[in-house]
Image 1 (cartoon, one colour):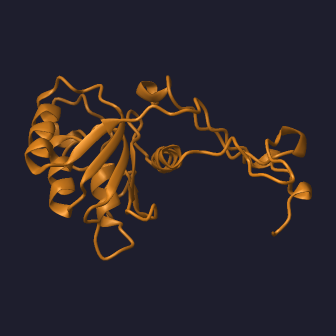
Image 2 (cartoon, rainbow, N blue to C red; image 1 turned 120 degrees about the horizontal axis):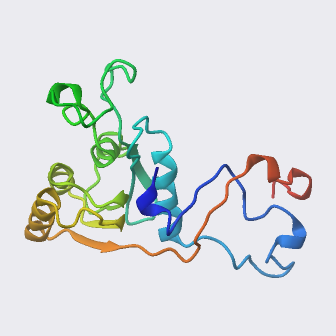
Image 3 (tube, rainbow, N blue to C red; image 1 turned 180 degrees about the vertical axis):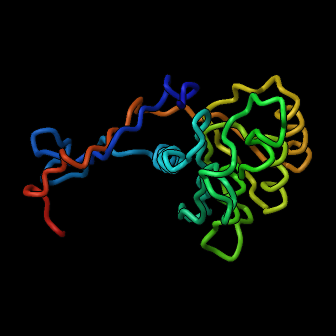
Length: 200
């Protein structure tokens, strides 16, 4: 899973960058230097959201951010509300198209837009692991999102991606590939040293 992202990111279970004093870059009179950039933070949020997906073959997450660098929507690919994850199909190789996932699954981009916690997402930026398909491009354009940051464009030669880029270009939506500075972000709850932390 996430094979197309493995060269960039490996998200495990929660390790904060402030685990032990001897490992900190924090000096008493200065700030830490090994913190995440905004782009890394938002892309990591999208990838962490993807961990919620039940899809056995492809897990994608999306994170929408406004111009104040506030997260206003997060989503991942999954079945619509009321449609059981256990009853609807997750496969994609059945000769009967109704027994494949494609007619049923909501993509991460769609869910992030529909799950927004603001009045709208106009002029926002979307962070997403995989370049949006043509159907998601329609949602992105219609919602007013103006920029897309993605990690993988592995389907660049497929018609759905070609159509997606054609619409995004026509609508003036910018898109660019993200390359993280940190190759891994480890999250390990068991390694957090609470004894060396304070509330302020």
